[in-house]
Image (cartoon, rainbow over all chains, first blue to last red):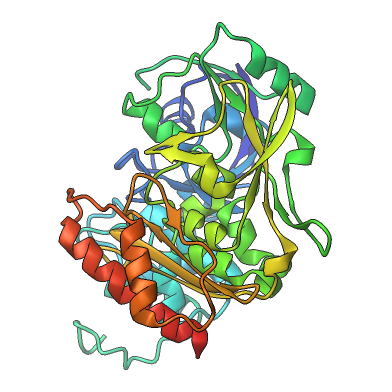
Length: 163
Length: 272
């Protein structure tokens, strides 16, 4: 089937087989490998992308369903060689270790901040509950979101004191 | 994916119902896809054709009226329910249930009707809908029929749907408007997980109703119980209704214990 869609502001048109997921389409057909393939079952959130203004697990969307959609992936986050405010906050707060969960984490954090410009820690935990991290630890990620929304006080009871 | 299928996205209801009537294909309806695509990948579902219903405009949206009550259509997602003012005002119990369903991204795609049609014993929406006396409107090219939700579930992942039928609406009757209800789901982790047990308790139209998920082949619900029922009696009636099993998530005994515990706690909360 022929699919036309916009990814990170760029228009694409491709023929895809019906059973191709949006995830594989983005990674293999468009070559945008920032979005990760984790569990394939909606558990880990590594494949999270923005589709028509909402986060989705791209492993659970068919590419053909995205016909006409506007998609944003991690590759669209930085502009003109400059990291976004959110990416900088992740960097500053050591919210990245292996980096595998990070693209999905950023997408979820983005929708969270869109819905709650000053999220509480509870709202952050809920907004990111669909994204598993197995190495960085969630504390730094929560702090990165607090930082990105101007709420980091430096008294979060960090494991890494003196930051 | 390992399994090949054709994809079609009908633009009208008639086209869809005609497609479902074609008896030489094994068709599956695609709405949110959060169960279907996982099942196709794991080989549990092997449809020849996947029919996406999201292009049918009359299948979107939540409406409320004093006459008809709350109407949920096939493309309504869990997050739609969580953001909807009429659900918040009239049936906040449904928002409690939706809130506990999976993760944020999944709630952006997963639909209420999909959660019901999937007929998993651990459905999160079913306990709230059952307490509120929800009705299921089923359509096919032969016409429409409406059944109470408790009769719609007939076994583990089995429903009263014939192959040419689909659920077009879930209707929550207006009589239950303003019902005070609570839903509690026991999970292995404090993030997103399938339920070990889920219990909803509500006072609906002057009666206590208790619904339980993950403790029988289908989600189950009590009759309307007297509003002043003693808590021990309410627990006993609930216990007689459930048939939990031991599985990978926990033992039968633990399920029974926690259902009793939740009924006690929630009944006190809804009466407070």
